[in-house]
Figure 1 (cartoon, rainbow, N blue to C red):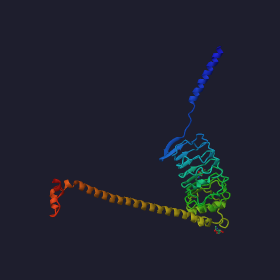
Figure 2: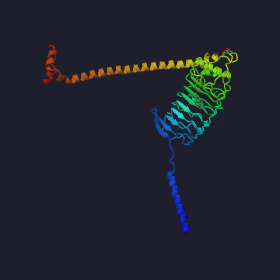
Figure 3: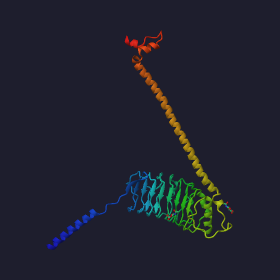
Figure 4: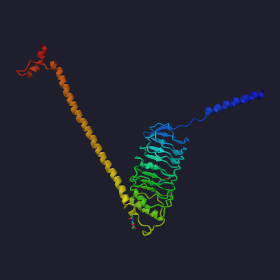
Length: 343
Ligand SMILES: *[C@@H]1O[C@H](CO)[C@@H](O)[C@H](O)[C@H]1NC(C)=O
Ligand SMILES: *[C@@H]1O[C@H](CO)[C@@H](O)[C@H](O)[C@H]1NC(C)=O
């Protein structure tokens, strides 16, 4: 009997402890909302997420999904969030991306996909009209195939990071008139060709450290960058100066090549076009304002005239003093209204 009682007490205590434990259990961590530079930011950083959450505010502009366990991106992953401008997906386990996942993100300016398990770059990223910065470093881009890429790409890429991606050569994305920084460090680059730099006519910084660049490749890159006025800071130091016969100057394949010229004209064309568009826009705007002003003036005048006429009609019996009337009066005039009124 006593033992029975003790057992019962024990069980009750256990139950109590368990329910207390249940109460003390850490509450489920949620994404946090905030603002950065007036942009709506949602941080879902390090929450063990396995999928892109679908219950967030759809007007999110900065979405941080880094340090999670996302393995797959689906066509529906970002369909609700078309205002995203900055998307952080680094440090996940992304292995596959369905076609169409990023297609609706037409406001996207920057995406960070570094430290994932991608074996190729989703080609639709290169057609996003606002994408400026692409981080895809520390992936294994062993099946990167750019045959199907539509060139020139639409994305106005300014920064590209493909460091540590097992690349044998620089990816050929066609002309990249706005690209100013390329990070291709920690890649074997065994098939590097100096020609690939002809596509980047405004390159300022290129990181080729820890790549197995040949001595000639190294010398050619350095020569090219000097001609371009870009920084050779992150290019491995060439140990020996090679003879031009062994390692020809690269200019006819870079800055004097038709590719380089077309890269430059594209940007000039874009600039002139935007200048003209801007000019046309201004002109249109001014015309519109002028039209409104003219319309207003005419309309107001007419209104005022009408009002005056109406008022005059209304006021006639009262305003025209007999004296004015007499002053203006012609001998053969009809009798005055006030006279009439008085009658
Ligand atoms: C290039 O990328 C690697 C890896 O992300 C980074 O460690 C390195 O600092 C970058 N280089 C430059 C010049 O930013
Ligand atoms: C560049 O010049 C070298 C000789 O200086 C020549 O052998 C090579 O064919 C030229 N390349 C191109 C693409 O014109």
